[in-house]
Structures are given as structure tokens and as C-alpha cells.
Image (cartoon, rainbow, N blue to C red; front, side, top):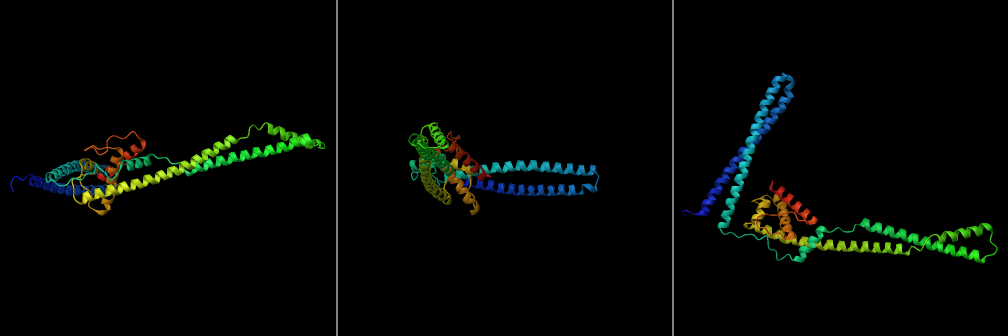
Length: 316
């Protein structure tokens, strides 16, 4: 059929792909040349003792010049390849859209409720009470209980001493003075430290309850997160398997084409799920930009940074 725009775009895309392959092969050859030049430099370094210093320097300069020239050409060719890749992707997308292929929807998720998103976000910023904090509060309680027990014991001893001082008539001077010291020492001890013991007990109970509550919240958040990730994973994987047109923001973050080998598609899918999950948690729905600005919330901001880094690594 003449003047078929889809066929024309396809032909153009194929030509770009052929040129891309040719330049990549050329680049590979140049890289091999770089390896050869590096080998020559090493050989020169080993032989430098067999020649005059001036001759060795001249040869080193010649090799360095060749190396610099090759590096410049490789850098230019790499940029050309990158530009061709962008062109091929743009043409491929236009062909797929104009051919009315199904489009993947990674923006609306009725299966993931607002409560689920809230649970996941709560888990991001949670700072549970550690076991060490509970043990510290338990130690403080034990110390206050011991102090209270010592006070009670001193009260009992003071009562016995006072009774001996006021009732007994046949005490030796030594015993009498001992009872007097016991009584006077108790009088300067101050009030019974029941308030401190009660405060330490309350703090310990609060730490135990906070740890239990945090562990339960973390468990609920983890379950919600796993369920949401599974839903996102299935939809993304299905869209890729059926060759649906993915959103522009998705392509911007992860590159135009998913990997083809199993060992690379798995980590790619993991990052894709994290990207979609982050947009859900952040409530971000831009059709072009994948991440948006870094959120002010520190926990969500840290997740933003992790997702951006992971996507950049996948595009390399």
C-alpha cells in the first residue's frame, strides 16, 4: 500500500536500527584498538630500559596522541549512538501508538486502597522501640525497686532502733549509740521513693507497649506492601509480555525497552515495581516526569532518592 505512514515509520525505524548496529560494531572495534594501544604502552614501559630515554618518550607521546584521538572519536560515536537510540525509540513509540496498540495503565490502581497506601507510608517512617530501649527501661525499674526495698529495710531498722532506745533499760553505751545512729541516718533519708519507682514502672510499661504496637504496625505495613507489590508486579509483567505501550514517564525512568534476558529482566521488574509503588505513595501522577520533586517528608524523600538511583542504574 502506497503512502502508508505506519510502514514508512517502520522502514525508517529499521534503517536507524541497522545504522545503530553498524556504529556499535565500529565502536566495538575502536574499543579493541584502545586495548591494543594500552598493550603497546605496557610493552613500551617494559622495554624502556633497552632504549634511550629520548626515544622512549617520543614513542610514548605518539601512542598518547593516538589514544587521545581514538577517545575523542569514540566519545563522538557514543553520542551518535545515544541519539540514534532516542530516534529509534521515538519512531517505535509513534508506530505503536498509531497502530492503536493497547496502552498499559500504571497510574490507576483500584486494587490498592488508600488504607493500604497509608499503612505502607506509615511503615516507611516508623521508628520502633528497640529491644535495647526496653531492656534499659527494665534496668531503671529494677534499680528503683532496689532503692525502694533499701528504704523499707532502713525504716524497719530505724523502728527497731527507736524501740530499743525508748523501751530497753539495760543497753550498753555501744549498743545505745548504734541504735541512735541508725535512727538519725533514717531521718535524713528523705521520703519513701515510691514516686520514682512508679515512674520507672510506667516508663517500662510504655516502652513494652510501644514495642508491641510498633511490631504490629510494622507487620501490617509489610503485609500491605507485599500485597501492593504483587499487584503492581503482575500488571507490569503482563503489560510487557503483551507488548502494550507503556506510559511515557515509565519509559523516561527505565529506558525505552525492557531487557530480554531472564537474569536482567528480574531486577528490571523489581525496579519498575518500586517506581510505580513510589508514585502511588507520593500521590504523583505526572504524565511525563517519573519522580517529581523530592518530598519534604524525610522517609518518603529517602524512598524518592532510592528509586531515582535504582532507575538510573537500570538505564546504564
